[in-house]
Amino acid sequence: MDKYVFCLLLCLMGTAGFGAGANNDTTTRQISIMSYNIKMLPRGAVFLHHHPVKRARLIPAKLMEEGTDVVVFEEAFDGLAIRILKRKLKSLYPYCQGMQNRKTVSYKRAGGVLIFSKYPMHEVESIRYSRCKGIDCMGNKGSILVEVEHPVQKFQLLGTHMQAGGSKELKMSQYAEAGELLKRHEQPGVPQFAAGDFNTAKDNPKLYPYLVDALKVEDGEISSDLKFTSDHLLNDMENLDSTKRRVIDFVFYKNNGVAAKSSTRYVKEFQQRWATKHKDLSDHNAIILDMKF
Image (tube, one colour):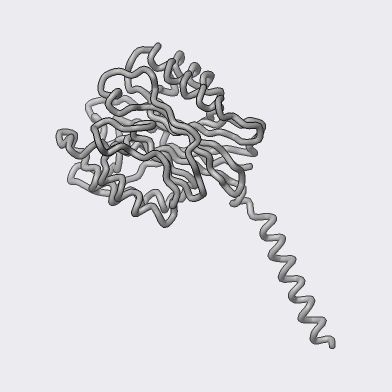
């Protein structure tokens, strides 16, 4: 009889130990989101020498090693490159939103924004910005809003790629439309994130504060040694005749009543030799937000 009691005690101790471990596991209380402009313009633009298909074969392994919960791509335009990305990312990121229209040289929805998620996700709404200028108009730039059923916390995520250049008034109109999209679907207890290439420098004393105010979001400092998402000084796909170094890619947060315990933002460069003169896998570095609840 004592033998049976001893076995029962062992089982109970094992169960208690497992429960304690589960309660102390803080890794499940984190949401991580990456924004990455991958410069995958149509490969027919050979004068750019950017080889989207070649890079599409290399990028997925780097992203899967990083392992963020959600990845937001910008400038995802080349059809073959996107099919390669989807195939190679599918094992870790089976959910994808933001499909391109292959029938013409312009694209539907938030032109070139493509979102991958580990967890179930559906589109809430997408918009095309009402104002644009130059070649950006061909890309149908806008915003796409998705809802992600994350096991820690259901949340909404806006992905966007805003006007490069253009007037202050044009940029402000796009800020306002993205902010209205977030506001339209705001729900108490459902936090919202806004990620993408906002083409607005963080050190711009006029436009950056207006952007943050229009979206009603929070930002934070970058904790990594790398400080710039657009780095002409170091990135070998950028114009190295320039020394311009800026943060123009962001992952913002709008809490809607859900306060985070902590947040960390960092810049990540993804590199692998793909040409004699190139090892950077895009002309932008990625920006990542890790948020603990």
